Length: 309
Image (cartoon, rainbow, N blue to C red; front, top):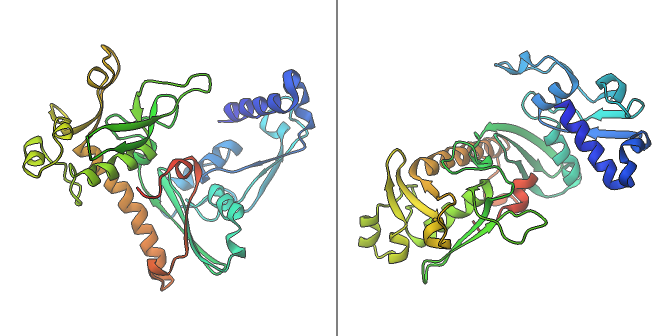
């Protein structure tokens, strides 16, 4: 963890100062570090045993200040490093950063701010009074536990649109800066949200998460092109083919990307965990969802999320 962050910091200095970026690291007087509670503990070399079971407890409280020399960072020995405070055991400095970036304490609105990951931190602001919780959402939103899941990076499908009129499927795929086109290799969290919403919209998926078989879809009048994408894979059960290199690109190689019934159930579990956390906060504060003025979804996931879906 320390080596990777050190390397990334040097890369940033290279962008700031040019070719001799590493030599200029000493010009950075202060670094502010945020992350979930476990990552902050690992970064600082703190004992994480208190975070492995209830009642969860941190090894340190409040803001942690040290210098690059304390972490063994060459070139950064005199740089001050400030790790923002965690709020409570599994609501960490990353949640504090969301609170700070959005200035929730300074708002006269009723707001929900959600940082979605394997652990979802949820902040509820009621006119400057903030209550937080965390929910174990699992890794589905990060592409893990999904049959064709992939983290958001080159080749990941991060947007899906299904045209009901002709059954065509339009995919947004993350490409490298030097390339305009890339072959889909898997699907990340934001793409999974889109795919499931679009499958529901076009009728191959029921509102309870049940994926229709080809015969059931045909009986309900679903487009014939979309019916052909419903297959029964050995080992995976019922699946919807989102991308087939042979049929969609006339390619002999490439990976077929499917959404399986189990993928949909894992997605529902993740969504339910986040929703349970939201409902818990609203109940405790005697508020309803209808009273919420604004919902903020944080992080990379929030950046690529399509609100309509």
